[in-house]
Length: 199
Image (cartoon, rainbow, N blue to C red):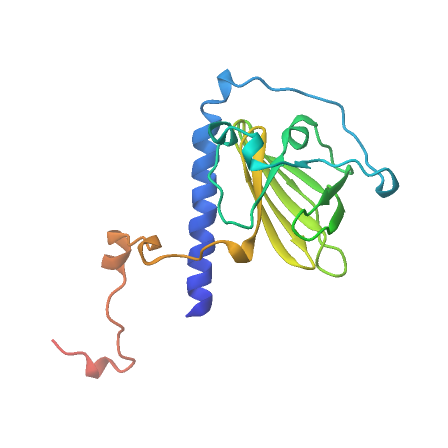
């Protein structure tokens, strides 16, 4: 039962992200797109892909997303969005909450829809140190997997919130979707012995 609930929750989240990105990609025609050459970063030459900011220094209307939790860190993510990433590029992220530096390499880039791109790296032998980044013309979402747990980046075009996945609320009672067509298809279980069928 727990696995079924987890599968349903993950399906709902994935469906919401696809809907969110597809609807924002329809408005992509009026969003200017910048292209920069790919940049490789070495750990010895670490330059942050994002910068931590104080919330008071930024107009909340410009951030684009509400702060998901008190522990969320506000980041300037404009450089993350501006670079035209390629397979093989090295990425380095500093997690402000823990100081952990996540280093990984892009292994896959896929265009999911017009203006919506998914960038993935794969886990190392420790199963940490990888990311899943999804960028649309107006939004930026990323999952980062560290030894301290998973972190989520929820952002717009310039700014985003980085928060531990453990800090985010789980599903609520109103997160369930019931589809009437499925209810009609799923009936009572049939007995194995046909003689037991009552009319």
